[in-house]
Image (tube, rainbow, N blue to C red; front, top):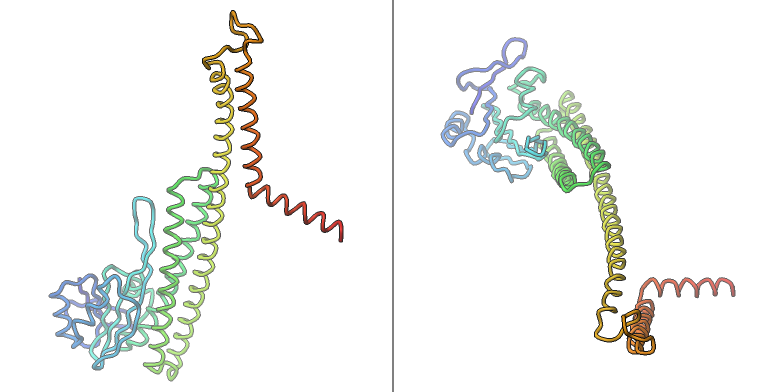
Length: 332
C-alpha cells in the first residue's frame, strides 16, 4: 500500500492521490510493482526501497548518489493466543531532493501519529522528519518497556499462587524481547550519530535541540531496558532455585515413602523364606536358628553399607573438615 502526503495550509499534512515533488511517500508492505513505480517517480533505487522489507535487516545508514537511507528498528506489539509478544521490525527512511520515502512491512504507530497531526513535520525538511521519527520511536520503546514491566509483575503475582510452565515460558519470552530491544536501541543510537554527523545537524539550532532530545530519550530507553533485563534475569534465577528446592522436597518425601514401604516388604520377605520361622505352628524356638542367622547377616551387611556410604559422603567430609577447624580454633 502506498500513500502520498504533502504539507497543506498551516503546515498540516494532506493526503494526495498522486506523487508530487517534495511529498512524503508512505509505503506499507508494498508490492514489486509499487516499488518500481515509486523508484521511477523519486529516482531512488529499488534496492534501497526493498532493504527495509527484510525482517532480519539490522539498523544502519547508507548514502548513495544523493540518496540517504536510514534503517531504524521499531518496537512491535503482536497479539497472540498466550498474550501480547514484543519484537522489533526494521523501518526505512529514504530521502533525496525529490521526496521522503518510508518503507515498512507493517503499519507504524509513530507514523500514524504524524499522519493524524499529533506530530508536526515538514516534508521539505527530511532531516527534521527523520529526527522527529527517531524521537517518537524512542518514546515508543519506553512505552513498550513499561508494558513489559507490568506484564512481568502480573506473571510473578500469578506464579506466587501456582507455578506452571506457561508462566515460566512467558517470562522467557519477555527476557528475549528485552534482549532484542537492547540490541535495537544500541543500533538506533549509532544510526542517529551518523545522521547527526552526515547532515551537520549541529549547524542548525532547532535540529540540534531535537537531536539532543533523541539522544536523551534513547539513552533513557537503553538504561531502562538494561535494568528490566537484569531484574528479569535475577527473577528467572530465583524461580529456578525455588523449582529446585521444590523438587528436592518432593524427592525427600518420595524417599521417606519408599523407606516406609520397604519395612513391611522386608518383614513379609523374612516370613516368606523356605525355613522355619518364629511363631510358626509346630516349630520350636531352637529350630529357628537359620532364621536368626539370616537376620544377623542382613543387619551386619546393612550397617557395613551405611558406614561405607557415610564415609564416602561429601557431607561426612564437610563435617570432618568443620570439626578439624573447630579443634584448630581451640588450639589457637
